[in-house]
Image (cartoon, rainbow, N blue to C red; front, side):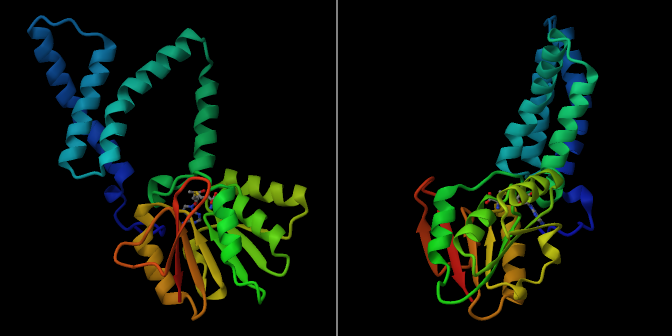
Length: 261
Ligand SMILES: C[S@@+](CC[C@H](N)C(=O)[O-])C[C@H]1O[C@@H](n2cnc3c(N)ncnc32)[C@H](O)[C@@H]1O
């Protein structure tokens, strides 16, 4: 799926999941009514579980990815329990607003890109650094650079290279920018969508994204990357595109996939 604005937003999994929760609501009401008529006493938690079960079933019928069933099932009971916990702790409504804003700034367009934030670690940074051609200066970009760990590490190890990161979500981008300032790093951090970059301007493109982003990433890389350039993807392969190298990273045993153009 492209990171560009979709033409049919209701086809996005997160929007479909929300619509399916709404569709599950009258089914939950009907189920609760039938159970009440049969004389079965119900708590708010059991009603939330019924709602989750209907939403998970509808998500399965609609063909959403398997992890959505778990999310759909757990969402109503977790919401209810969070509400009860907030009441018990006498949390002010502003606390929910603060948590919402934090999540919004951290995850931003994840509902659209299907690529949330989770960091890679030192093991993969070491592998990437080892695999960079050492005989010439390079232009390197981390597309979706998160908190900037990889970019800062490469900029430190390869002062001859131009190392940059591009990140869509404001909070990780700001954190990476501050980290670069504090460390006095030459690394550059842009806020934006990597779809707007021309991969032809880079010798090395590093991606740690998600399975949903890989088909579009390959089309873009194949169209724009120049001969001699290298595409690296941590953890996520590209269906039907055999990598030239597979490296098992030392920290997590996850694979770093490498394609030479
Ligand atoms: C799995 S994290 C990887 C972070 C970092 N590269 C690392 O290795 O630690 C993926 C990041 O890509 C960002 N992202 C997703 N789609 C993007 C897009 N189209 N343009 C720029 N950043 C994007 C997300 O906000 C998230 O921070």
